[in-house]
Image 1 (tube, helix red, strand yellow):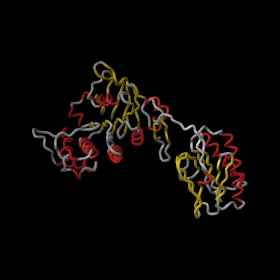
Image 2 (cartoon, rainbow, N blue to C red; image 1 turned 90 degrees about the vertical axis):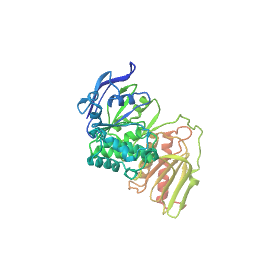
Image 3 (cartoon, rainbow, N blue to C red; image 1 turned 90 degrees about the horizontal axis):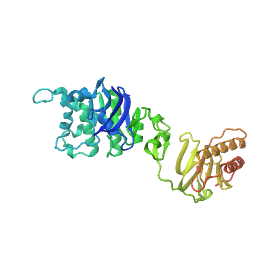
Image 4 (cartoon, rainbow, N blue to C red; image 1 turned 45 degrees about the vertical axis):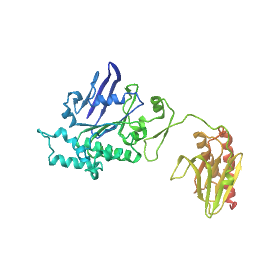
Length: 408
């Protein structure tokens, strides 16, 4: 539907967008990302014919966008700006009906039944049909944005261009609007080009991402390829973390505050905080700890203040060289550390605990999980030293649990 080749343009002789090329096919949702001043809005104006290119071309349905008459282009392409002011007290239905203007003929340009049906369908698709006779000015910002999305859909476009459509919307309205747009790409084959500031929203909804920096575009990529930590840090000039999701290859991006690490160690008396009540053992701390778990319902890294598990037949809890280890009769192992661990350190201690438990059980399979917890304060732990303590402590606690253990 859209083919952009070596597109360049700007204002007053100043080039803002330079040599951008990409395509967007039928039913494809393409997000444009980049910092302020990277050329996103200028590129959108070049794509929609609001700005003439200095070089290259943007083809829509095989024709240069500048070669269409306004009403011709409006039948193929609709544009939803970041926010639209409504100066007059038109009703919702009247506002949506303006989307049928390119199709109306004659001196008075009145709508026929076909137009009425399309307007009603557009309102139903965007969930605003119940507001049909209300003034647009009486609606909330999120509801109003859906009205203008319905107006754009009433044009029955093949291409929909969005300029930061979720700015100023709360989370529910953001999700509602993006869910509607995404559904239309699947059900109607609508091609969508949208500018985003929210990296995570773009990553979750877009099929492809076009990353921009200083007026130039990186090659179009899928979200899992484009939203790499190194790429984001290069484009935006900030430190971020990329968090993998269990249900999707698309990462979640979080920016990191200026480093103010706690270098003073915080000693938490883990052993005294472990409580057994009935058949359940719990640990609750005031400070959150990072943990790596083998649990099938939540493996991987996470943060928490609480651990819980089954301890029907008792619990062993001992401290070995500042590493606290708790083992239940079901051979669940908690390794509790007040210091700071790297991700590699977490993995090494998890492996050490698993191997020590296996040896203590003479190769028998254990039912319980292994959890490594660290407060991430103070200096980095001496991992080899901690690893030796974990091996020795896990083996001793598992053997004690096998021998009957200590009831707590």
